[in-house]
Length: 444
Image 1 (cartoon, rainbow, N blue to C red):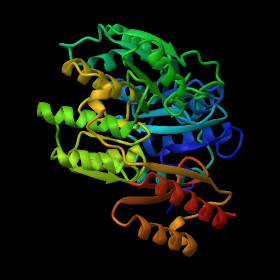
Image 2: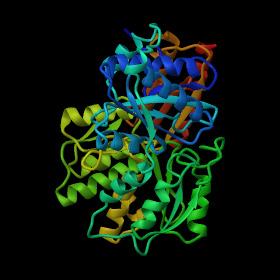
Image 3: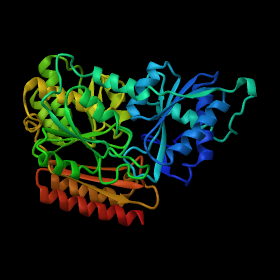
Image 4: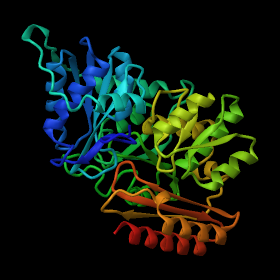
């Protein structure tokens, strides 16, 4: 059975349109309770800074309490913070209200199990199978209770700080932190300052509507200009829910997820702490694969989505994985993708080595790569179209062994992502545009 509502990262969509309605949230809570909290238990609910978070928080609270679960409301907190506190409070389920890097008019709902891990496809299918049933409302004596946890942010800050080597501090580092006007707007600057950094915050003034708006990991141009302008050593940009990170070096150059993987993997290798292969995705730059191979570090590719990176890490015994977009997983520190914790590990490498971020990233060449997002009105599988298959075959013939082509449907947006990578930048750009045009024609 294929999933109808769950994508690569929970349920997501435009607020007010199915499935992102208050009614659906109540039914989703009830379905999740049936599958994961059948005898009453504890559920944590956290959110990012979107205006609609108030509505979904109330609806989910009602659904879980009506089903007999006790609810702990964490308020605005990064997605990985909810994973951490789900374990700390010994809860049965952690719920995140967020649409991650999407604009404010979208929202989403995703879950962590009691071990702080995202749900498997099988569990998500089991929840979907319960959605057609009426929401549970138990008799009064069996209802759950709800309360707010005022210490949630401080608890998560302490956890993040604990992942930084105790023999090091961030004293002497000037850091520009971009919180995307999202869930990390307090946690990020305060954790960095507590560790000794001089922090200049931007994108840390949420108003419910400006999350990811011209800021954060998906729009780092302001950060790129700010870092050299203020003479900072480094810039850190998270996305709206704090599970993605990109960094900016002292020259204002973007350091993406592939380069961050390279920096962490080579540092762990040098210190003897690296275990298993490094895991990227089918979209990871070929330069990363080659740079790691040259340093005798095994590299594996997983499907796009941090949940699949995590799955591959666990299957292979690896500890470091991530996506080009900045979904970074450092399993020797935490259980899920965490932008702030990843950034702290990179800052630790900078401090321990005495090297600037640009120096650390210089060992990985980046092959020219172009991504075109083709918006589609109807859902299509690129592999099912003869026209698309023929166009891809022709493009691969041109590239020969000097590059790669990846076409995939996004799990979070109505787009087909067309990626072409190779040594010849002009050829890469031309082939990406041509393939995108074919996909657009087929999807009309």
